[in-house]
Image (cartoon, rainbow, N blue to C red; front, side, top):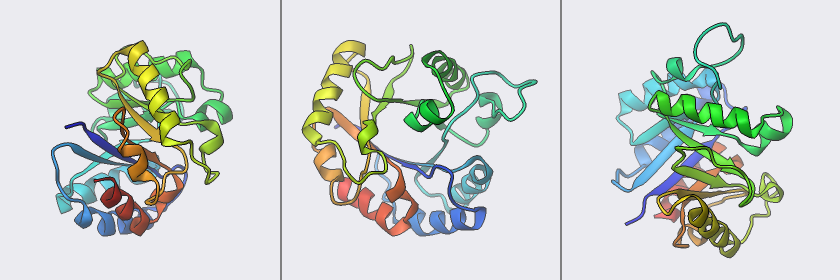
Length: 221
């Protein structure tokens, strides 16, 4: 039985109060299953409070970040080092297309971030835009996020996502788990999960609505 990853990427949204409201609504609705990994990645200001709420509620939610520093802790103003973040996260989204486009992240920077994550026992999810996007050494979890599908309401087809997943596995090893990201909703999630090579979804805008996110999780199972 393959793992099913369902990752909520809130991007730059939600106050602490809004984040805690989301956890309070979603947490009790998530059924604990060994092969189902439900992850929430808030903004940095929300991470610690979300982690506390998840622990107090004993919810089967993994808390992650949307990024981390390519450097260790030290004189790096504005950066969030993995060595510090590891106290509150177990997962990190790295190399998202928005980071690449808007913040000029390079493949080399992303490779360094992956190294920092792995050195600190944080699971990195590396986002790739196509089969030619480099996948850093040690990466076991990738998300295919076609640029045209992000925030547009126009997802790629499950068949294309499956084809891309197959190519990534051939190139980087069958053990790599591939997620799909880009305009995922409760109406289309099952179509992606049903593909043999797709092990989950990276959910952006739809993850902000707790009711819709619960539907996505339920529809995926």
